[in-house]
Image (cartoon, rainbow, N blue to C red):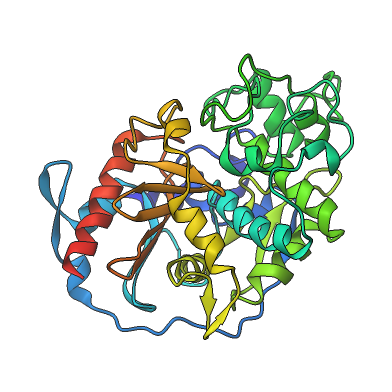
Length: 389
């Protein structure tokens, strides 16, 4: 059915104002470069996950939302473009739809945040910067706004008190300004914000009513600002920084990241990469930061990310009902029972179960940006797969 829909429209049918909507998203999430300017995150192409495919994994039924459901039925129901299941570093299951393939690029949305979090762990240690440092000690222009007295740690753990409505469905107001500033949405030439770039928009945001650090508040501009902070600390443009510190050393192939009119990289959601390379990042985290017998990441930082999220801050936050045993640290979710993950809207996942040595990557084009029902079903599926591996 979806294949027929994809064949029914042409390039002229989608644009900056509808490209994130289904059914166009089945194509555009894999072809962001046709709409938004990008820069390359250069890779090294020197590693490949071995394949020990087990066809039975995706021929099984799993208990999803309280009933048994066939794998392929669930994957179609959840608008999956591609899926990889990794066991102990080898690909044991794969699924592709809508022209997707192992090394094809796909927009990962907020999985980009978790990638940025890893780079932050590397850069802060290398340049001797304490995560509790004020943002204002690194970048100019924070005076009078939300970030004037916030810390880098607040950015990493989403505890900035900022007056911003993370409303994905909105096509007007502050979220529309945000999309326009990142060049993800068209804007009127005579608009007061016609020339607004991403940095200017973010630094204009006012502080919220409460103190920083009080509760988890999921606000994407925090992670875009973190990318700029890391660029200022290192003196290296963000795409090159990600390449040098993480992407190439991990053996990933070249990816892209969207940029604004000033070439500021959208580290909160602009990365497009392959299923394979997202799995490589998941494997890096599962293995405690180790690649080919060497520590690319500080193992203590990986443990901090998995184990040291503030559960009280999380309990006061907006995602507690989704993950009652959860926490958030260094832009990664811990969701209980030792599992942790990176999550992006429209159904993007890197799910990691260290105990079972399993990493699952899922790229999707779910019509709703945030779909709690499909998220719960996805977790049921992931956990079911882990039980049989």
